[in-house]
Image (cartoon, rainbow, N blue to C red; front, top):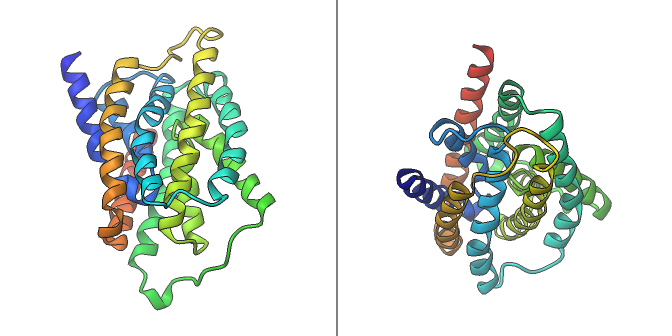
Length: 261
């Protein structure tokens, strides 16, 4: 247990420090570590990821609020859309997608396009990038958040890590999107973790989170998220996008290879 706790603390710290500046909690990259390194069973890995988000989220959010970046109604719209979606996603995950093969296929389908999108947009010269297209209409934003909430509930990432790249791709600045995406991730993870706790009484599988590992990873993420949010104004945006895109693409390709084999 000691090795698992310290390993989880280190993993959460490193991942959150890198991902928090762009509005990603890090759960999307922590999941393969939990599966491959710590051996968390399916579907317990999903609520463990949500527990990580719950514990880690306040670190970055407090720093963004302190800096005045967490303001406006974008966070509220994202939260209102993702909350019902994450409950539906949790239900689907427990009763319809418990097998590791299907889960890895879903992970690959999510991570590969997300990673390639981040990577290619970061590499594109500034004059070749799509100009800002403006904000989404409120009902469109809510619908998008709902769909992402369902996917996030299935995958255990809260949904913010998918909403962030989409909104940045629309032309919104990272400095505005990052706090709102993390706020949505934190709120939906609270609801998602509670949903999985209730569903654990209705399922005979490994539905409850790995509490020790989730708390350890979350504590590391709490510290790393604060550090990442504090470093955001001083970090090159293009380098962060390249790193995130590379990680997401590599992990997605690994899961795709496992499914094919």
